[in-house]
Length: 147
Image 1 (cartoon, rainbow, N blue to C red):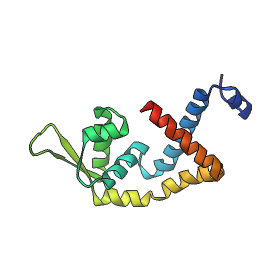
Image 2 (cartoon, rainbow, N blue to C red):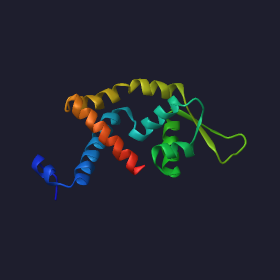
Image 3 (cartoon, rainbow, N blue to C red):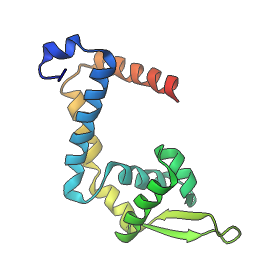
Image 4 (tube, helix red, strand yellow):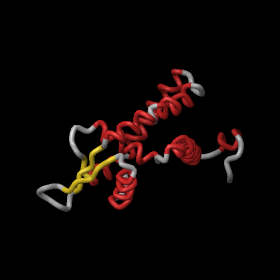
């Protein structure tokens, strides 16, 4: 059954509604980032690296992103080709690669600082403060259960 109208949403299982909302939000975010040549995972990597005190391994980034090492390596290579991160081999263990954000990467985060505000505005314009608080609490509960 395709979800076409509000009445259809009200009849669907919560998992279907949640999945539909997730796909719509994902596409909304991708469309916002596309003009900047950036994907959501790439932006997440830049933010994670910007908050880190030291270089981060690809393994740690994979765990953060919930992605396999191959996918994470591909994302890192794309960011490196744009000059947004650097990769260096560990001096003691050549199997380990450390990732650091560059000045250009920090500038990209600044350029996209509007992004979180735009996404938050979508919620702020749709939900009142009590609904926002309830949604946040529900999502936190779901996160705790599935982690």
